[in-house]
Image 1 (cartoon, rainbow, N blue to C red):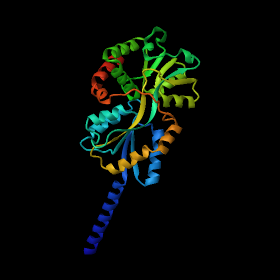
Image 2: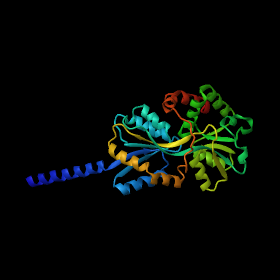
Image 3: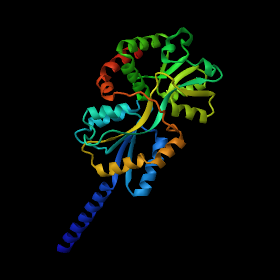
Image 4: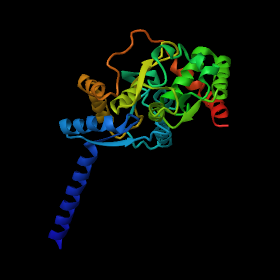
Length: 303
């Protein structure tokens, strides 16, 4: 009986050590980076380090918002170690809510741009609008598509415009845009598909979605907005009270390494170069005004 008890204790200790080893050697990342781009990078990290990565991805329709709400809900009992976002706004929003570690500032790397995308069978480059204000002109009635500006980079773009233009001008423009029969759809990739199929002539989207459409042989072209655009950077947030903060730092270093950035550029997820002149965005102000901006956007685009 005594030998059986000793053996059982040894077995229990071995299982406990094995479980601890497994836990210590794994890191959890929530990411809005498209899975097709992110997964190979995370698998490469596993291969190089022996550290298991548990990744939680978003959906195209709600993009980062779903992950942000999950992180806020888990604040008292964090399940995630690192937040890898393919834009910045929601990461700063998490920082304002105390979800991110105060000792680790938000880090950014790489860039995408907001772009015009148009059907080359319907429009010539010279006819593409010079600025966003032009979209409210009668000539573009029913010919323009955007992603619903409540999610993803389109939501960020609209809220940055609100900061830059002022609340009154911005609200008037949003209303005029809706009155001009702009089509609002579920995501930037859908924008590119509709433009490529010729259902609309012109759209607003992201540079990576334009590249994906060109790769798929769609009759489209794209170019960055010369006015009213902004640079969309990947961002990294370290979760406060994360189970594995040290492994989170190792993974963050990997994500920001030049080979990973090069692979994202090669895959089309990032632009080859970051524009030299970009406007400064006061993210705390954008975050502070978020609820009011969202209320306006809902009343305009969902009613």
